[in-house]
Length: 284
Image 1 (tube, rainbow, N blue to C red):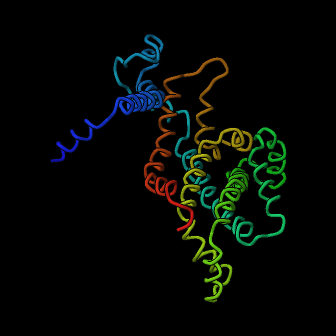
Image 2: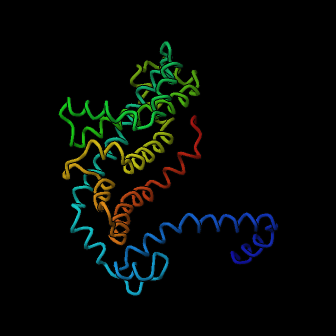
Image 3: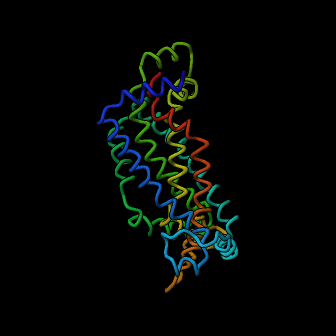
């Protein structure tokens, strides 16, 4: 019965739908091709890559590139630093944004429009313009070459962006809902935790996922603030494989593949949460 239903559904597709389906498949293949090349070259030997190029099928699959990468980079330490930084920034950044946006969006503080505009401008500044103040600030506070220098910086940056997003969403929360909670005797903290937080939970989940992935992939600021090998993140450790005049491509591909796995696992775990957060309305 299901096969017959599938046949009827296929028969209903118009030529335009088939064209759109073909374009979607072609786009998917185009998007996946870099990942396919990454996997393909990670299992090649250096000689195989030099002889046949990046597009050829491996003459034999080998784990030599992974072994070489793990011997040259302290991957467990870099992985732990990246997980610690990205996790703390994701959850603390969202908590900071929630508290700030609550004051701006619902507390209606004076000059809230100017504050939101200032936060938006702050998120648009290039990191290169911030690096000198951040470097000397970390040096003065004794956090240079520690993960906390990066955590503090990105909690503020991601929190500013989250405040801009959440303040706009909170302004749409019905006043009747907040007034009903106030009449029932709820204070501001109880209104935030028991009324506003459940309403915004899908949006907060999306921000947590994005903040984690964005922070995980950050390169420039951690490169300047984390020179000590014991505090380096996965992207910084991967960059140390590049020599002044040469680079081992298969080892870099193997390291990139290992670096990709944690974010891929995190994305797959929270994929349903992300989909619900994107499609859910801001007000239930």
